[in-house]
Length: 184
Image (cartoon, rainbow, N blue to C red; front, top):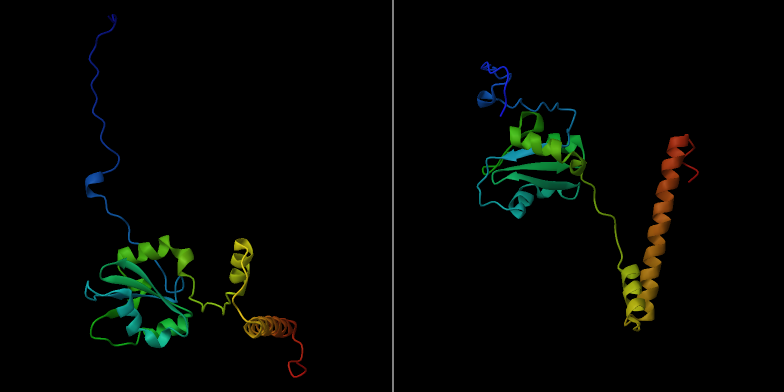
């Protein structure tokens, strides 16, 4: 049992923050932060990715991707800000479009949270299954069913791709160094 001073000390401390009336500040995204991203909104809940891709089919070759926010909101990621500005002019009866700076709080939060995945969309490079086929065949210890002409054609295609890549790198370097382009 405690003995000693038994004075009752009661003090009520007022809270510093009013958590009942807490408001989350609006996420401020300027137009220059994600100029290649737009918000697609106000479309039916039944819409799927394919439906949105169909609306923006003319941009798919230039590089276009969809990132979902919720059932009626999505982010459209374009390859460049110019393409995104062009897409803002699309008039469609089933969807509405606006810049990300005017988007809903949820869309802005998604853009901020997934910033690294919202880089401008780029086309996937041309690929070949030759390396995978060789690895699988050697691992299984079986012979390839590919004919010699098919192997040679695939090898030639890979060599052409390497040469194209080497030429593009040389052209980029020449432009950067200010070398004469007519000599190439």
